[in-house]
Amino acid sequence: MDFLKIDSEKSFEKLSLELFNFHHRENENYRNFCDNINVDLSKINCIEKIPFLPIVLFKNKKISIKNINHEIIFESSGTGGLKSKHFIKDLELYNKSIELCFKNFYGEISDYIIIGVTPSVESKNNSSLIYMINQLIKKSNKKESQFLMNSDIFYSLTKKLERENKKYIVYGLSHALLDLLDGKDYNLKESIFIETGGMKGLRDEIEKDELHKIISDGFNTNNVHSEYAMTELLSQSYSSEKQVFMTPAWKKVLIKDFNDPLKVKRNGRGFLNIIDLANKYSCPFISTEDVGEVYENGNFKLFGRGSDADLRGCNLMLGDQNN
Image (cartoon, rainbow, N blue to C red; front, side, top):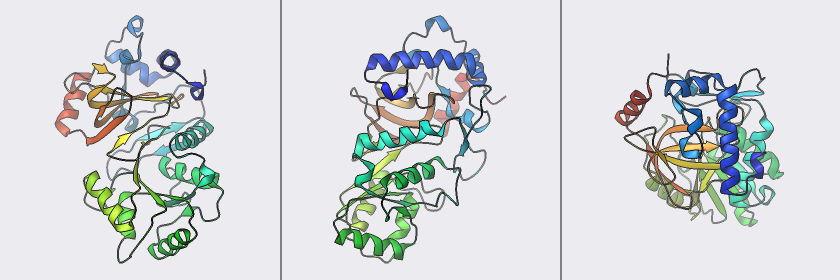
């Protein structure tokens, strides 16, 4: 079954279990992880029982099914130490996911001008985020769509777009958006700003509510949204307010218990476990280091990264996966 054809809880669960068996058979590092925690295949009969791979393993293992070629390797933008690598067999799967995740939340890409306040795809071609923005820029098919970090040019362009009442979306790294505010007086009523997280070590981290207020006040816009994704996933979640995110039909967020990493439930508070069926050839079942709450409707709220103590505790309970 194609992940894009998911139209119910039943079809999501069916494909998830099919992909679990596929990865247990064909993905050596995922199978080794399952063996390490003594998984009994006969008991994996629902999504809560599927083993979720600790995201840290993307830093020191090649997470992929065996005997395939890869079109690109995305690499995380960590500020130090080992970086996560995501081996991508089929970029067309990512393209479809990017476009439909956007469409589910905002409508047709061609209705918007897309501005990426990030490095360009030419200068950083191994970033999954920048690849995503570039794909949206291309699909928007607007001459004004572009990567842009120069504050003077950004100011002139957005002033023109406002004057012409054009719809536009600004995707931006948090630190790069704040850089645009220096010495400028904006009035961007027609804009949607989507901050994509993290100061990347270039500024002090700011609480999300405070960050969004600074962006809203500085650019004079009421539309400050967030995008939640990561190098290790191929599907995005979007939030328009209060850091409550919506996911596409082929992606589901579950909760891992703070005290028992093998206890997973569909809602509540804890670490976020994510099933992303677009990750067909790497690993669809990821245990993140992020803390949040999943509601009964499947939407989730993000609180931030877990503490070092919490993460060490979970890793100890799972055994040493780095050897």
